[in-house]
Image (cartoon, rainbow, N blue to C red):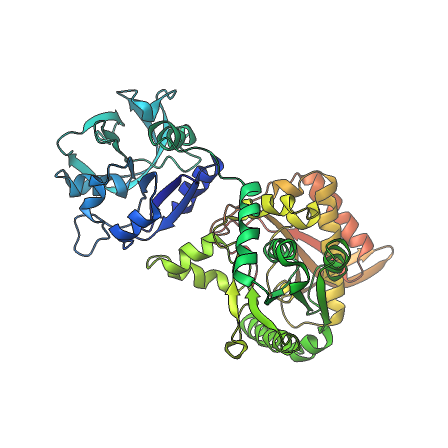
Length: 511
């Protein structure tokens, strides 16, 4: 049986990072809301509990909290930021508003090298708090401090309860991974038995049990998530799975052919390939507003998918590539908005009249784990490592109205850009790279003649989850080379620019 770490999420934007760090150790964990009851905790039977950070003040009315009886379960507990303050607040300490808030790097001075700081010397940590602890509960001792936080880390050694004011889960805390490992492995005794190999084996058994003799429909987009879902279910139930791939004509160059090659030929999957490009383009004709584009594509996709799925008379389940971050964000009262913000890039939507049961075998996995699972399933590297791609496809990368000519121009230019990134060995070092065709024409000179053609924008960013992103710093030589190839090889483009905007203030996609 797997040892489980329970993370109670109090609304921090980086709670998922705690979970990722623990999974990286090979230890299974689950993220739950503060209303996860004592009975539910006992049923989950965790080996240890971590209380996350959060934006609230523990002393305010209505602030999220937990049942005090959690501290009597005899489990090791670690409170991070808000979590540490909550420990103090509930166990007799005092927390109040700081005269001076602390956000950013701080030097941590370790006072006691209890197991939490085993192998860790004075180090840089990341602070993010506006409240401070003025008194710690009886039985607790200070084990580390910073110039502005005298209670930066506290411990009740007898009860195995620890609190840290800083965020060990973020990369800015230099020894943060080691501190988390010390708590999870050395203090809590969790065994590293969580792996994608084991997950694959267990999930295949589970899929067989759930599906039985019934049939499953999977909406295959060619992206990482849907591809891994299809490969996993295919390995579990084979011909009981039918994948429907709707080609809306707004894919990357040769993407439809690649999907057919992988799933129809390599995996021998029941694949229904629907070329609906003419239908989508006819409905998008003359439409420039990005929100209207999305709605048209989403509505049309559902209509086409519904029509094709209705032909499969014995289907009972619809498979979806829901991931754990989606589950966390959509279920948390302080994070529901995040799910809404992201959803506009997805084709999305289960027609109510289909009345199929959902099958979501990836709903406990993070994106990086999905990629590892894809490798375990034998998916080729170009599928497993593929950059994110929006559901509406190139429709939101062509600014303005959509025409077949613009689609071809963007496909060709983007293919060159990605090809050069791969040749430079940079593809796997970049989270997302793509091209945007602008509704702007500029004067140029090609040969002895004057041109008046389109501008292409190049975009490349690094990110963990798409919520924030930094620009990838290409060399001038690389960008000049890509620009030269695109202008020389793609008709209709005579100028190329690079987008240096981070997120925020910009978004990753242009529309």
